Image (cartoon, rainbow, N blue to C red; front, side, top):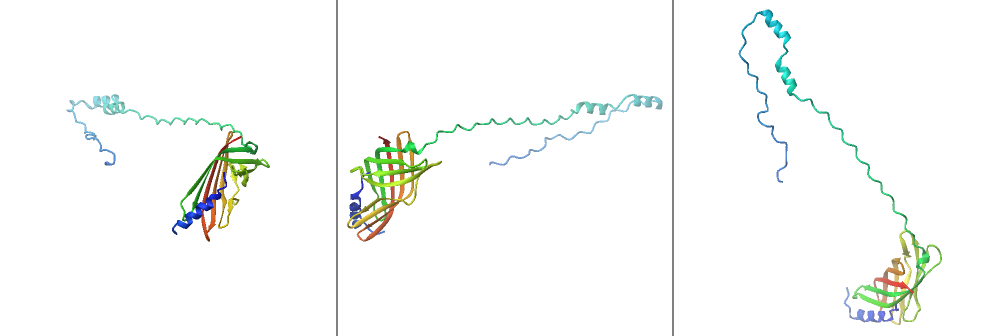
Length: 233
């Protein structure tokens, strides 16, 4: 990134010109008609027999009505027991992926960066540098340092420390960058959050920062978003 020395000058000009701020529910249906049992009709009485013959016939022949009813009434079916539920197949845990180390980040990168300034009472300002540079170093298995380089002269703009953890690279909050001082203006940005990731030889670096600028006797606050996308040299 080029140090935006013209940023303050451009913002000063803007400050000078800017104003202040169902269907029916289903139910059980009625019973079918004619389900009541009809009373049996009596047949004509047979001719009288003597008492002895009638007693013998009664003892030797069982009542036909009870027998017929027993034959017509089916035996109740035994309730079926539910089939046992099939065991769910067990899924194996995926194989552990190779963990990225700080050594993988170390190197010099070149690419493009974009800085977006959002300052109160002023229109948003976007600055792009197609020749942006960044240098990454490491001092331990978890410590990283990202040096933002001024592409116009190769000088350091600022160096931000970060930590590599299980969730990736996190830039430490509260660090200062993009500080500028001129006769009638000054500005600085403070890291609120930041991340970095690596895709083979490609580095992605993002910052969300608060931004304060003093110009023409006024103090203006806002934010600065920075994004770097570069490849290792």
